Length: 251
Image 1 (cartoon, helix red, strand yellow):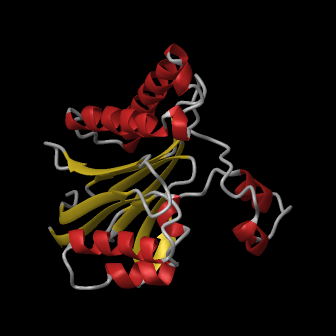
Image 2 (tube, helix red, strand yellow; image 1 turned 120 degrees about the horizontal axis):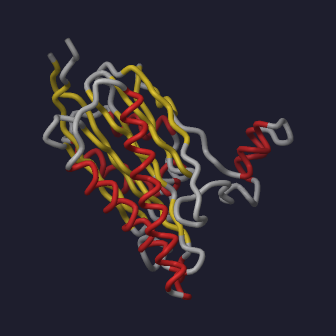
């Protein structure tokens, strides 16, 4: 019999201290089938309306998830999520084609679909998904950036990557091109806390501090707010988005 996890969640975005507008979006929602869906988007484009791109993406996925039926086989969840991401990509791209001031807009997207003891992660760009196990952050996604490519090919060390001037250059994004590449990862889920966030959080707050905030006895909304406050206290150089889920009971 498939496990059923009962949990609580919260999500929040913040403009930060240096930006004038917020291009990040976050959402956690459940559907009638009892599945949980976490999404974080980090819009790109600035004056080219990165905020519009991230909103189109999250609205498209949320609407599709509301009517989603539970699938017995993970293959069909991946097909469903691929189709919905392609729909969002097309909507963003066509919006930019129709309006010159939107040209070049796009967004990252990381989504986590939790269905019983199955966890499916979709990744486009450099927003991240984490699982918290044994009081440590375990990254479930790999950043799709130029600098990560250099590290993977041995051209750059991890230390050099941390301060490389091109560390924010994306190799993949949603809505920039008519075609789309989505990276999927699947995990067995056993009730671990899940955190999705944009680079405005993980570039500002060290992993140990993130875990410390999430390990308190506070309500989940207070934990999420605590992460946003930590990012701002560290400089608030960017918008930040956080989506968080933790189990309170399961059977």
